[in-house]
Length: 186
Image (cartoon, rainbow, N blue to C red):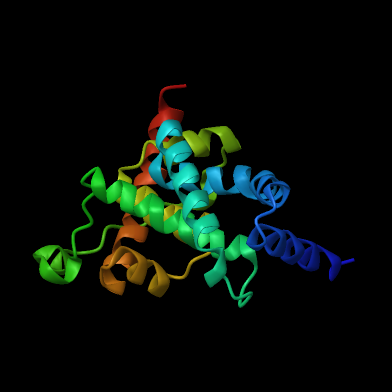
């Protein structure tokens, strides 16, 4: 059964390459929700995520001839969605400061909060992630939710690996701080 799913998707891609509108609709239905959620975790705005989704599908469908089956269609599309989401944030003036170019890297490390003591419902964590600044949320989402490693994130965001590592560490600390603050108000 595992072998039939990729073959089915390849057949859908082949149908699209031949101009079959049902193939386009089937691929869109198959991947739209997951790709929307991927974008939403990065851009943090429903309207923007919808725009990114539509642009990503337009680009993907427009360049299907360049799809060579070196990965699944979903992985290929996800890369397009992530890049478009990040570009969208850049247009909104998201700033990731390169730690290598600042004196911030010389500051002493803050003590890490005890994350084991913090247990929350999924909705509370999602709300806390949405409250993170764009840069933190982007790095955290790409690493934790999208499965990119820190080197890949550095390449995608065009910053150093040290910057990504620091942004990720600070994002976790900020997330814990937001969560604790929410618990204090209950």
